[in-house]
Structures are given as C-alpha cells and as structure tokens.
Image (tube, rainbow, N blue to C red; front, side):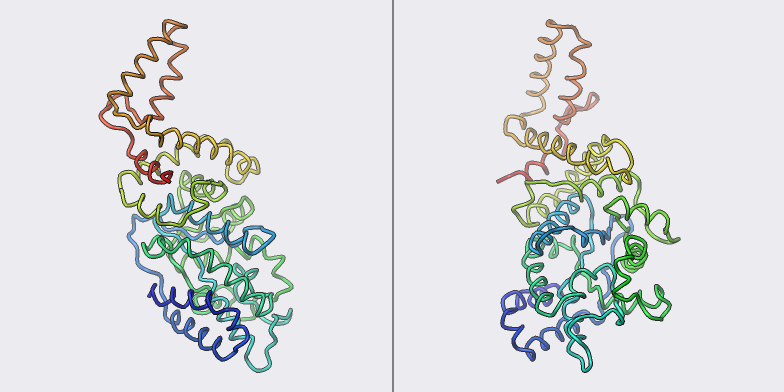
Length: 375
C-alpha cells in the first residue's frame, strides 16, 4: 500500500508541470489516487502505543508554501522523537478530490461562497485556490514530505486521506447530513469548528487529539467529547513543546536517523523520560502565552546539553566519570566547602546519567542522543 501511493507521489512531483496542461493524464492520476484510498482504514495499533493526531500542524504560518511545508515536516520529525504513531494528511488526495470536483460539468475551478466546503482543517491547503495554484502547492508539499519517507516506511508516520475519511465517517455526524460550512464562514471557524472536526478525525484514528497552540488547547478542553482519547498532562507538555521548538540537528535531514535511533527500545523509553524532565521545568500552563516563549529557552538549553553528552569526552566509562567527579568535588570542597559544591555535583551527575544507588552504566538515552547528533 505504501509503495503504491509513494509511486503516485513521485509521478506527480516529476510530471506536474506537464500534467497541468494535459487534462486526461491528470484525471488518470487523480483517479488512481482515489481508488487507492477508497476503502482505506487506519492501521491497528496496540493499546499501550502513544498514537497522536495533531491537526494544528496544518496551521503553520508562513510567507511561502515552501517554508510552510518545510516547517511542517520539521515539526513532524520532532514529534516523532516522542510518539509511537503520528497521523499526517496525504495532500495529494486532497488535490485529487478537489481537482476532480472542479472538472465536473457546471463546476468552476474556484470554490464559491455558496458551495459546500467539506474539510475545515485542510481548507487553507487548496480548496480556495485555482487548480494551478493548488497543484504547485501540492508538489511543494510532496517534495518536503520526502524527508518523512523512512518514518512512513517504519509505520511511525501514517498518511491518511482527508476528504475520503471526511465523507465516509465525519460529515454526517458533524453536520447532520445537511449543508456544510460555506467558504465565507471558514474564517470564523477557528478554533471551535476546527477542533470539532479534529476530534472526529481523532476518533476515527483511535488517537489522541494533540492541540499545538493555546487557543486550540482551550477550545479542546471546552469541547471535550466523551470517548475521546486524551493525553496525560506530562505528555501534553512534551508534544506541545516539541511542536514549538526548533531543533537544528533535525532540520537538514530526513527521518532515517530517527528510525534508527528509535530501534533501541530502552534508549527511546529513557529519552522520553528525559524530554518529560526538560519540559517539566517550563513554568506555567500550555495555554499561557508565556509558555510558548519559554519553550525555546528550554530547547536551547537542551540542545547544549545534548551536544555536551554526545562529545567523545563525555562518553567515558562511568568509573572514569565518577573518579573525575570525585576529584572535582574534592577540589571544590577545599576551595569553598561541601555545600557550595553539592549543587554542581548533582547537576553533573544528572547530565552523566549517574544514579546514587546504581552507577553501573550511563543513561540509555545518551546512546540515542549520540545517534541523533552524529554527522
């Protein structure tokens, strides 16, 4: 299944400029996309897996489409450092359905205010654009999504068909089978209508709805529906923080490094604990505006710590580290007393991953960090 849709992605990227001028070939491709997703269902997952749906990824503000999708992919990579599975829309399916609709008799290329707008969450990604504009944006998105291919192959990122799922499972429960929201009302649909639709998608996926912004989070709390899978408070802090951080060691690569690092189960579990420890230090609630401003300060501190941990000098044996730590503590004690030295000792031991009760090995997360930062 993955191979088929990826082949269609590659065909569209390679041939879009010509496809836009050859209507019959474009229809053949869009028909293939529709057939591929016609009976698509979310994959099964274990009850103990952390499965997330973050629709706010699609609201990345940007001047250009290239910047928008590059940043969106960066955020997906960062969230993949924590979650087991992550649902991301296949924007080619959105283009295919919209393109087919615009070529039907009596339809205009642009969606008019009086026509029905189906998918609110994905609206800004083509429903209000011409075929050419939408196709250009879709091609730009699929080029950026190539960085996600290792995560897609590993089943960490799951592509879903937004329009097909909406029509099959969401439209009638959400709107009662009547008219959907007209285009002129979409601007007033944030965040309440956006979140209503997002909760329906998350129920289809049996995933936790992840709100990435303060307004979205507040609306989710107000509109919480019984039966919706909810993340714990510590998980919410981590994923909200990761989505807002900028981690330069992921910005110039694809997901292969993450897939390899995650294959070490004990290191990945410990790395998750480490992320919870870092984000716990951010003051306030995720709904506070200040929370977003404090996230990057924590990210910069975390990156510095990661770089230090990944240096060859920091990967000495625990025995050597303890000896050096003891020597440093002794010098500090002679210089100013034990109480002045103790905070630095505790901090250093935390970075080395040492435990007072068990000094046999460093934290497993250090192995994962070394892989992520490796050139």
